[in-house]
Image (cartoon, rainbow, N blue to C red; front, side, top):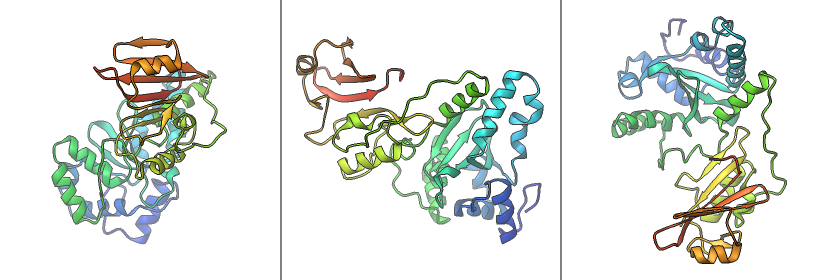
Length: 315
């Protein structure tokens, strides 16, 4: 492997360089070794299926958008670049894909195969997959090449497993865009208030206790409640990884209520039990309690089909 991005087998020396130059000393994931192996063999699938333009041997390609030259253009840009550089300390960038986008492992997960995040040309962070295998599959899926990608991944020993709704594998992870924004405003000397973690742990049968608890803890609570991890997107976290919003649907077991209201209750029952709502429309009724919002969504028969719990500033 050399600075021009070529590779002559992934040797121990190569792993050490990738670890030091791209991954902040973390071990090289097996998925990255597979990608380098296929690069060596000139596998066209890297570009054709996954849009990979190059595999990174260091972080120099990030300097175009986040280096000293652009930071010198203005004080505000410098604040933003510093915020991104702070974010980079938890990311192991490994590939440049189309449209000026980079892929990186989220190193704070401290897993053999960490989740993968995408940083686009606008400086926006987005979770791409719970593993590199899923991240690559999702890229190919967007190109209508999901079946071909699944076969390619399986042939190379990259286990994809069951792929649920987009985002289900990463929904309990921190919102890195939110974390970047807060870091930026901190750099400007305009720190934004951040919610404090709730003191009581998440109770599996009391969804009200899930708000402002760590995403991993809430995921465990939902898994315990359902008997399996959620197969649908139902959670949103803030930059610290605390749950800020939950959407509950008909998959909730009997006996689980929110402010005493179960899925399947009538709108009349909701208003009788909880009183006058803070807001209401034809398809929903919202209540506010102790700095939380509770929205009961109803169908055309005015039956509660889902319940949203969140913080007041959540759209």
